[in-house]
Length: 195
Image (cartoon, rainbow, N blue to C red; front, side, top):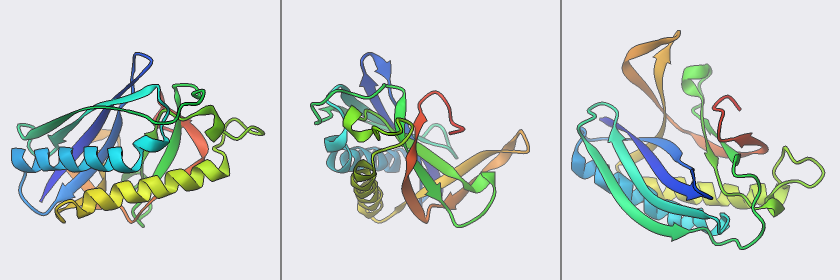
């Protein structure tokens, strides 16, 4: 089994806007599988999420690295843009996606952020939260994204990967399967992983 980190490379107003997710498959690491994952993640993001992102966002590629064996990597180039032609929210705001593994503890928790929100997705009465209708739409997007990647060739599963234990690097990554990916109402920021 191999563990991969897939980075959806993006840009918004000259700012790098990357989304990082982790996956495993049932085979030993390989460049071929890394390229398959880059294709699966890129196509699933394009098909399920991009239509809800602001027009100011561009997806430029997907970079995949095998955590177990860094010499195995993959890349797929994209030139896609978001589809929502409304005023953007701050480029630092993201919709938080909580990754649940069914286990307790920091090593079993994960999340990623969906960038390029439009101002209409932010709750007008509390700008620290998503508007509830936007949360529902993004949840559908995330469900489709994860499902499409996992169905791509049937060998990839979304994971939470822990590389640190008690403040020190682990001797081997701890990967735990994600049981659910939930879009949360509170917004997060791109410059902090502790939201």
